[in-house]
Length: 424
Ligand SMILES: [Zn+2]
Image 1 (cartoon, helix red, strand yellow):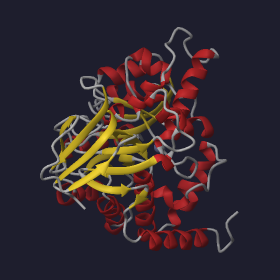
Image 2 (cartoon, protein in one colour):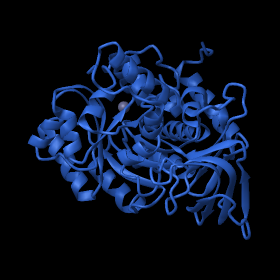
Image 3 (cartoon, protein in one colour):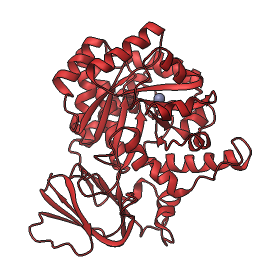
């Protein structure tokens, strides 16, 4: 449902826009999918839909800067895996068994899990083989049908298929689903070809980097491009994060996965030293939950742990709850190059916003709304989710038709992948 004039009334509004700050009680008016006004006591004349947010917090939706969404089809199957085990099991054994229909299921489940948790934008780093156009379209159809704002970072297919997606399906820069390239570094020639394709299609790129000097290498090969999202950035040589900054690139940190799978220390202190504000990311749902509350808490915990226990520069400032909330909202939008559209509640931006309840027993009383979001809340506190002016969750309930059928398909897939063994 897309009401043309929608009013969210009476909430405590954390705009995450430094110029607007926090409003103790205000209304948010949405017109034609955009935020048009934020102030107390907006006239409700001509409003088609009202959402009562009294006693609630109103925030921009969360932004996940890197997730391999198809893996929702395999949720929780790799919680004990190291990175090497994940490559063997998930990427090389399970992925080849998935049909185009299974990939559609994975992407749609991931999108709905995100929306349910108040995540309104996800970059889908699509690292699954695309042997046919049908596979690509199955992944993409799930994104476009979900209502989520997303960046489809095309990967593991052919240049011809990427050109087809760009020219026929994702050619508009301000659409709800936009395109990037998953440009993992291979041989020098392959890396140059990826850079040339990104230039030809006028697309940003995303790639995983760990250790060594991968950013310097891209510069040496002449393909260090502005707008590149560098994923993880753990354990890199001195100066690499500064090179990310100077090239107009961005950093996506997945703290929960980096700790459990062994990527290395999530580089929050190093990013701060380099003057980079990172975005956060879920990465893989085979081992991490799909919400950003978990990622914010993991970031705050490991960021402070590293400095306090001497694993990072002891002179680095201690990470705060407000900073990690920025990482999960406006910082994520900056990381994806979408800060002109989303990431804060700013008149003129698209209406991607969430209403969080504060009257639940695990949250009240609220001394500090930022701390409440970061330290006490979870997806059960997400009352309303609006993307691009469309209400996708309301009164705690996801409004996706066909959810029971989707869950039944997920169980069928699980049974097939485990050769009929019961769960557990
Ligand atoms: Zn990843």
